[in-house]
Length: 112
Ligand SMILES: [Zn+2]
Image (tube, rainbow, N blue to C red; front, side):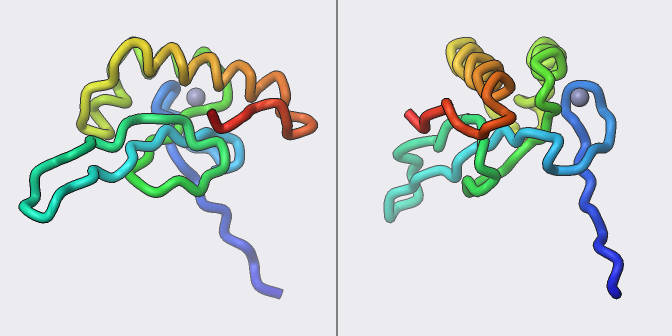
């Protein structure tokens, strides 16, 4: 029997190391570039509730307080090295709350 190694990730809010499944990933989608290398779209920041979105990610606990802490300290911006507009934070916080409420049965959050 092989021992399974559980990968730990650090919460951007409280700084604790936790299992990935206890955390939510905030992901910066890869930039969309044209042939001459200029950026058409800078990807954008969103919550990755499925854990499958491509791009650079930062982890935070499912606890909205950790999200708030990371938001106030601008830690997401630092670890993803980009600016995050207030309305994007609002949207992510709402999604996080909705996700927490429906965590047990795993539904109720749409992708839109
Ligand atoms: Zn945390």
